[in-house]
Image 1: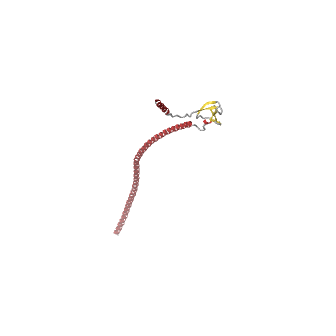
Image 2: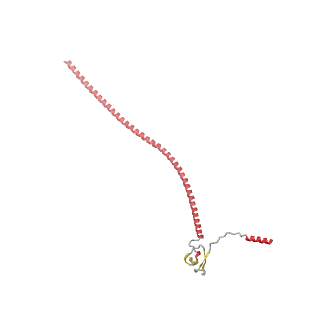
Image 3: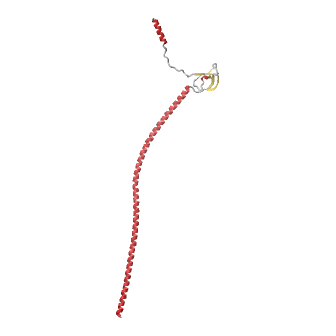
Length: 219
């Protein structure tokens, strides 16, 4: 009975499947190059690594005539691909991704520089706006200061014009006064001459009357 149980236990242990590990088939192979189109021809190159670029010269049945550097021979057509293998495509994609990542990094740096330049220009713009406002205020003050001399000059011009007009009026008054004086002098002369003439006429008349009286008395 004990032996039977031991046998059953051993069978149970043996029937338990072993824990399987995950693995992948390696797709990196080496293809031998032969001197002719057949497996019986000698190997002229021990093996080209998968993904190696070769020059396809032609095909003979299941064999492809290729050239790799100085090696001229044949390999199975199943190892020839008209497009790059997945490893090469992956490598090219990885290289492109790395280049794109580098470009992204460069563009990010350019963007950061542009943002820094924008911030700097924005600060300079604010400073210029403040300076412009200050200069505008100073200009207004200068205009106010300059306006006083202008107003004084305008007032001075008006006063000079009024003074010129007053001088013209004064000259005219002087001229009229001179004319009036000359007119009064002429009148005085005329009056004096008239008085003299009247005196002379009166004297003659008196002499004439006196002579008549004497002649009457003599008779």
